[in-house]
Amino acid sequence: MKSDNVIVDKSKAFALRIIKLYKYLLSEKKEYVLSKQILRSGTSIGANVKEAIRGQSKADFYAKMNIGLNCLEKAAILRKYILIV
Image (tube, rainbow, N blue to C red; front, side):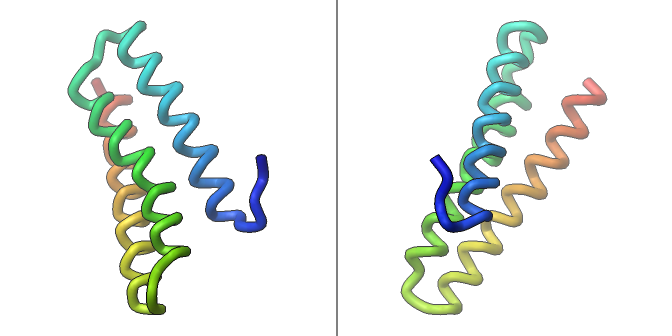
């Protein structure tokens, strides 16, 4: 179901792809450590976006969006590590 917010939609789609990646890494590659880390960081992006939308001030909004961005960057780094391993 699409919302009126593109960032919410994209973060949700990203989280669903991360969940599929997590399941693949567990079942096919037997990778447990990095898979849990990428699951946590990849799915928390959407949660931080939702919190930002409900923020009490502009400063709160920017802080929560920045946390989401940091989680996205961490997921990208973990993805690179998984490709190496």
